Amino acid sequence: MKGTLIFKMFGVILAGWILMESSCLLSLILERTSIRNFDKNRKVPEKILENILLAGIRAPSAGNIQPRTFIVVNDETVKERLYELCGNQPFMNDAPVWIVICVDLHRHLKAAKLTGVEYDFTGVLPYTFGVLDAALSLENMVIAAEAFGLGSVIIGSVIEHAEKAREILKLSKHCLALSIVCIGYPKAKPERVEKWDYGVIVCENRYKDVSAENVSTYWKKRISSTLRRSGEEASEEAVEKLSKERTYGEAYSNHYTERFIKTANRKLMEFITKQGFLKDV
Image (tube, rainbow, N blue to C red; front, side, top):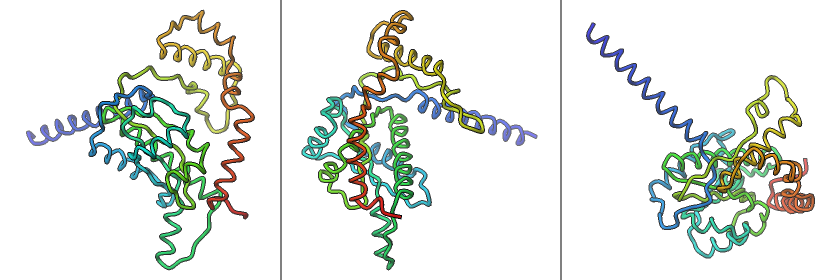
């Protein structure tokens, strides 16, 4: 009887510990926000960096092909060139860790050849799986960074200059630099930027279109959080005024202009075709 009681108590303690750990993990995910204010005087211990990279390695992968490569950048010349490539964003230089996330189809093609099979079937499906796998690794790494008390920010603009990134990083054919994640200790953690409402993102059984009311609600919340992040007043009147001065559509179209999208699309399509990702069916 006494042994049974002890066993039950142990079970309750274990269940409570698991619940607490799960709650902590969920909080890390839900509260995570991009950091652009790093303490440049605090280095990330090598063991922590190794664990962050291991988290990326252990991410799910379609068919377990793992078409991804991570390049840790610590050479100042390479950093300087990537910094310029990504628009000279000052906070990048304050982050002690830079990891370039690459879609890499080269490895498994080379592995096939090294084991006696000439295989060169690439295309939109393997490329898409590669992007998905790289994104899963990237998410694992930013969550791992959060767990160690670090902050991170993802730099996507490297893909806008794929050819130059290839030259800087000496990438093989069938490799594409998808993004850079900058990691370090945050000086301060800003408020999260608002996301679209749960009921807009989550659909049941079939796709549900967005409404004008959905857009208005989101945009006002986004403006409010942006004001608070910058230390400005986020009164109802101020938010209403700003939402009328610049609508969601105007902000989106001014950021992703037609000229920018067409130019970026053309350059990226030319590069991924040249790199052997896309072939005629």
